[in-house]
Image (tube, rainbow, N blue to C red; front, side, top):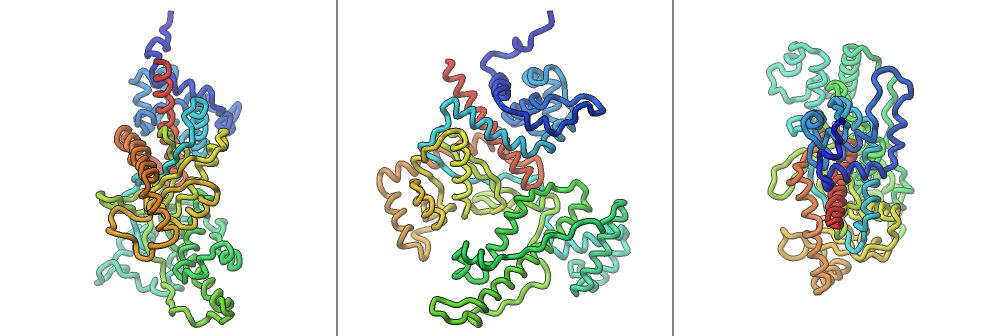
Length: 499
């Protein structure tokens, strides 16, 4: 008789929980990407590859080559694949092709946790952690450095280096690029030469979408624009631009030339957005009236727009940012957000490109409530806890108006005393609430609830770096990571009940 795979592992092994969970999931969305009757070898069953990814990530094995090796050597992996060994390129391509579908596995696993009684809403704790991007800080480029590198790539000879540098230091902008007309012509020539080398045409490529700011809706929807000054208009414009990029979710190109040109387009788009926001602000001041009906023109300080884009962009992963956590050096990273209940089950998982947590209380909380409502949990949470980095007066007030009990400390641990200007109103009300015995004991649950979750993910499972590049890929991977965390919670819960 042939050997039975079910006899190779004990009945309480994690692999049986993974396979049982996959059997209960509706994975029909994965089948839509496969052609029926196509040429070539038959594809692996998506159910097998989903189970393979879930189990591998649960064990901290995220490399496609590492997963392939385990399919040769590890008994549990052999049980999942039925003694077959998918190639590492098959695993990587499946993960890339079904990026959005894999992200939905988080919701599927959360539904299974709900059926097991692990998704309650007594307390929801929100926090973020920095996870390193698959990119080096050495790949950060300024606009000038990027222009020089594009021209180098286009020429492919040392002759350009002599023309660019001469007797200068080497970091100055070349003479022909110091005027807008010369810069535009030189870059167009460089793009054309790169396109010819790659045997493709760029004439049919659509023009980048121009950023436009709706003055009336912007001022009405964001009252802070009336009192925040020019800097607030810049901040709102950048937020809208980042939100559009998040919705578009463009993948990161594999070819370096493509990444160079994409980074250049991003630089120029950032510059256009800043100029458009400044024009919108100037127009608003010239046409609006203050509370007394007086013309606002002339009250603003003079502003000179930069001649070229500012900042840096990473060529390996343009969506990532340089971030720093207390006690650690700066690194290219993403800010991974999560909401956790008292059972340490993650009920929401998101990726942001902002180093700080300011402004992300409401989005993460709304995401958590949507997930809970989708699985039949309609009662509001007993309390919502977050650290001082999430303090956002408007978002806290709106959450309280919805009947939610929100506890966020207005004072960070690194500051002695209160923040300047944060003495009265909601700030003092929150301080007094946290000084009560009930509020103090409740707020103590924040660290003991969510910090072990990040410790389990980043230390025990050694997941402190994303394997893929781009915001959409990082979002998909983060939701898969958090889904496997919940799967481990479900496994331990089922073992405890069986025992």
